[in-house]
Length: 394
Ligand code: FEO
Image (cartoon, rainbow, N blue to C red; front, side, top):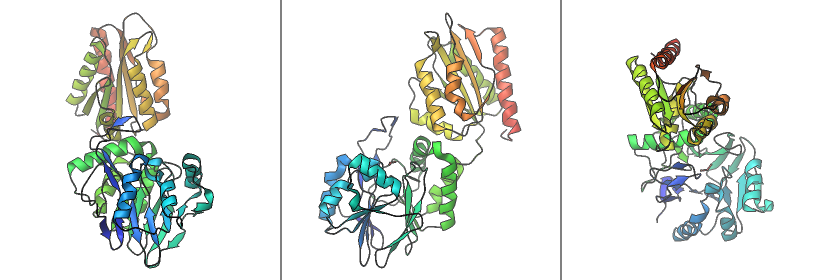
């Protein structure tokens, strides 16, 4: 495969992984992913920015040979996670003169995870520069998008930035330049939801920082390269904003249909009051769809059946995941149904407690909701509406 030139002497040398179905063994991928690596040929020195996922190393090295890359001076490691750092040991072996240039946290990670010899690592600090001759690399340490070790690399003369996982998408392509589409936007949002949402405030900060730089090219470590940099930056500005949308997401698990009936009743009531809803079947649904809905939701309504005197484990997992993803939601309600007893809500509430949600009094019914329960559901609907109104959402 001939490397694609993105700017003069900056080449794409990454690989697609169209067959990969799940990332982090957690959330399904809809379009596989790409592991992006970049080659920069300066007038004096050659650098590679980020490397390759370990199972793809052989193919990656073959491509470097096929493109005549017989000398590499610097391997820039923007992040220590192995989908990008995994081929560093093989590159250090292949190019004996090469050194890894990175920050202290990545150095520590690749030493521990990949057994990289620290004598082959050159540590840089924030705003340090490295000359390749006619190109200057400037390093921007950007912890929290998404690991503590993350940094960006900026090519000063080209006004182009490598943003590592930040601004990426799980997406494959033939031409590395982004073709703006709803499908790409969907993939980028799904990726944001799964990987970046827990670090929303840092995403907001670095979106603005990069916007202010007005780069001509954004080159992330997954998904396509952006020439129209506002496409991805404006999406990130929207997703990472503090304010949610006029949306309630309702994940539920219902063993005999009673909980689902209550969820459907709430959905009907909220829709009648102008509030958008996303109903999510916890057992059969795709976690990525739920994560995406949580990017925008202001309200979470969790529906759960009782199993063995506690919450259904699938709902417990979802409450844990929602707590870990740290969405911007501000309001929560819980409804559930039981057969013979137990405590449904305290364990679910614990999982969500990190979100500091404004929790409406939960409703637990034995079996099916009765007339008095429907009055309580009406009250839940009214409370959600009032709170959305107070936030100027409806
Ligand atoms: Fe794509 Fe954090 O690795």
